[in-house]
Image (cartoon, one colour):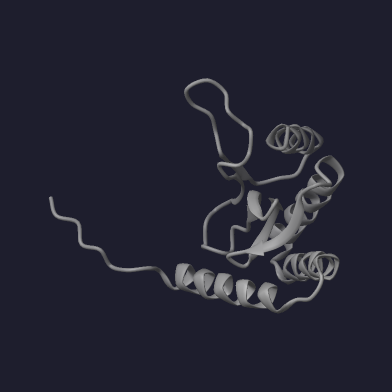
Length: 146
């Protein structure tokens, strides 16, 4: 069986362009305090642009991360909310509409300390925010920075 590479989807290309724009914008900013405040404003603005379902989830994720890991700096990453420690992305939210998927995603990068034996999850589907989901996200975020 032969598989033919058909290139990136339009959504993937748009995400890469957004990432390049985010990087250029961040490079032009002034002091680190000013950069941090502007980056958070960008994240909040991006969340506000999301569809209702994605926006509600992203708002709660943002609040949970800020409350449980205040050392993580909000920033845009491929046009989506992300949270970094020392400039490295630890976790991120990806709305379902971004890549036309059936659920939003909360993901963790290598910098997150989620290690659990020989295999562990680094990405979680988010379809509804409940008290139990909020508690689990808080625990994961805390573990990610411990």
